Amino acid sequence: MKLDTNNYKLIIYTEEICPDCHELKTLLTQEQIPFINKSITISRTLQESYDKINSTHRWEFHDLSEEYPTKVAYSPLIVVENSEGKIEDLYSSGEHEGGFESATEALEILQKNYFI
Image (cartoon, rainbow, N blue to C red; front, side):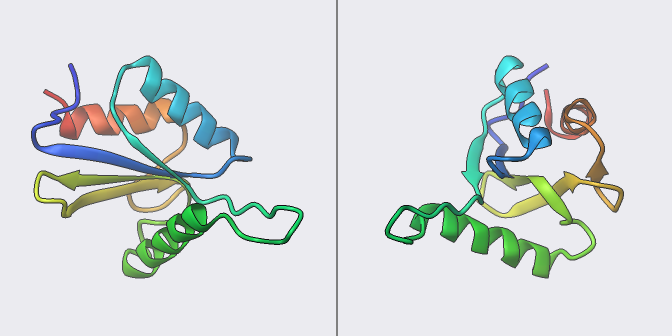
């Protein structure tokens, strides 16, 4: 089984210090499942400037949590987009609607719904 890449794209929002995020990225990579990683970790340099790309990703994560408050709780967050770029569904770590407790459980959700 593999991700139906003709119809779906995976985007994951992760944090650098998040063990669950690292576990999910590792598992998806090992299983050769394509995904786009968007880090939401904001780091500061010695000049106190923000990483603009990660800052943008963090705002995207925030906007998703506002738009889908019952589905977005913690990172990692998996966003499944259809071939038109519209959100099919979201899955995030934690005990809530669409939540998963481990990378393995996240993979099982994806396999059940988006694999061929």
